Amino acid sequence: MTHLHIPDGVIPAFWLVTGFALTGIILALALYKTRGEESGRRLPRLGVVAGVMLLVMSVPLGFLPVHLNLAVLAGIILGPWLAFIATFLVNMFLALVGHGGITALGLNSLILGLEAMLGGWFFRGLARKMPLVPAAAGATAIAMLLSLSLLVGLMTALDIHPLLPGEHRHGVGLEGREESTTVLEHHGYHLPAGRSKVSWQRFLALVLPLGLLGAFLEATAVALVVAFLARVRPDILSPGRAGGRS
Image 1 (tube, rainbow, N blue to C red):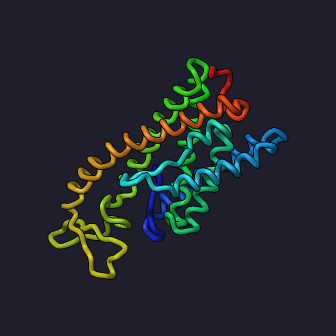
Image 2 (tube, one colour):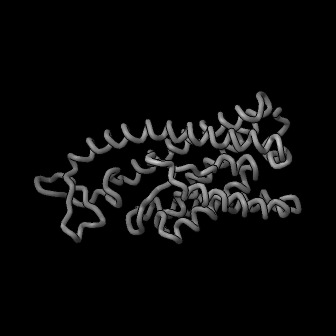
Image 3 (spheres, rainbow, N blue to C red):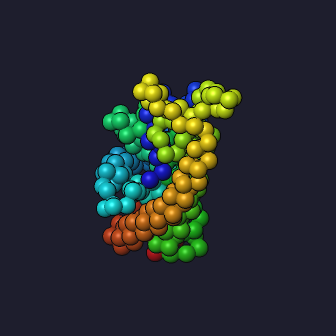
């Protein structure tokens, strides 16, 4: 759900470089943290989890304009650092098939990767104080809301018009007013800057309820999977369990 569907050529250079730089730093740290024999044995599991994430993302939820991503489940099963690597691979594959531009790979990896890492850490802390299932649900809900806040904050910083894909402010129009133009500018389409405030209000009015609904569905799905794994393969939850009770 928390994913920037932005085509190439729209993200400003500063945010493009910042996104890739931060992703590269965290990815290098993740590779350093997960070196060793134990992490090597978990690499096949990383591939399976990444594949499941891609599969789940492609499943529509009926008429709902959201989809699951199971990023927090990756954090629970793999641990926070391996989960970041898994989400990076997922985002790279999505970018290669056109689900978001290549230039958005850095920012998308940050959003989804931090969601997985935070979810894994939150689960690890909550599992010490409560049963695994509510710990998984709570960790997922908190991580989802934080990643949604990051997504909205990035869209504000990128100055992308929320209702028109690929739009950013550019230039000064008549009477000295700043105009918003899209990547479709060569087709003659322009949107006055006065529309931007109204569109952001509508955007937030849509995103907040959908974000809460998405967090609820994601938390429910992760809790159900954790409940199943706790019964049949509790060892799979060991990277994030840290002494929690089933």
